[in-house]
Image (cartoon, rainbow, N blue to C red; front, top):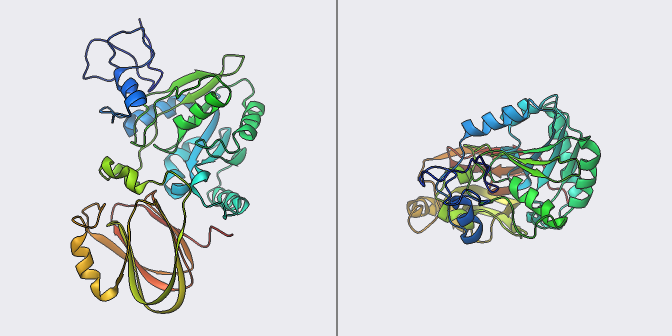
Amino acid sequence: MIKKCLGCGTLMQNEDENREGYVKDITKDYCVRCFRLLHYNETPKVFATNKEFLEVIDYELTKKNLFVYLIDIFSFPISFNKEIIDRLRGKDVILVINKIDLLPKSLNLENILNFIAKECEKIFFKVIGIYLISAKKGYYLTDLLEHLKYYRKERDICILGLASVGKSSFINAILKKYDVSKEDTIATSAIPGTTLNEIHIPFYLDNRGFIDTPGLISSDAIISQIDPKYYNTILPNKEIKPITYQLYGSYSYFIGGLVYLSFTNITKGSLVIYKADELKLTKVKNENITKTLAKVGSTINPSLNQPFKEIVVSGPKTIFIGGFLIIEVSDVKFTLSYPLTLGVKMYDKVFKR
């Protein structure tokens, strides 16, 4: 009997419990790995690799699917990935921006939509449409589904994106919304590589539906580098309450042991930090930077135990860092320090209120 696990998409087998897809009873819908992930939130021991992701996406691109490219708004520059975008050129693509529930309600969503549209124009990436949603909260799912129904033209809808942008959660949210399933059907986890192969979920009357795929793991993302025990500390999971500082004098601001910003002789300026509530923020005088750095990795955590790269920045800037942090700085000059391996992308003002 040949059967795929409904949770991760891998072929089921009952011969080797150390291999992916193991289940004692092959008639079950979920392998042991996914069953324990869904019901006990147990950390999986088998993950998809980028090689497997690219094999799946290249196979799906041979079909005449409608493609949904799902992006995490909080880690926009990382999930707006060139390797995926280049493969999608010339295809029917709808760009869906997930996790808008993390952003403060005071932010203007139309401005964010315009910003993303301009970023697409800069790289000549043509899409059918751009949509902002929250799979977790169900925001704007109904409107999106109406448009998907119109554009799919009796085709499957293939969901692509980086690891942990919420592809599986997106499909689960749709299935719950339309009472196809009352519980999560596809296994989800903050840990990248949870989905191992493509998963086809019939949804429409013509037996077409959604295809979930493994996510490409970005080397720029914090989740690909840090101990998973810190995920709950660094990854926002609810609406962010930005922390605002009025800048003056010579101070440095440490975000955990991962990033710090140093300002010298500032007379007027502002700093806004968007981060998870659990991620500690420490303000120190510049003369105490060396002492503070000595505590990174011991009393100041989390950290990546890497040398810091320093760059001088002139604001105003909106800075996205590693998929876990967004910083807005007014028209001042400062030094930004961060681990060498974290992805950092700067824009002119993004969040216009």
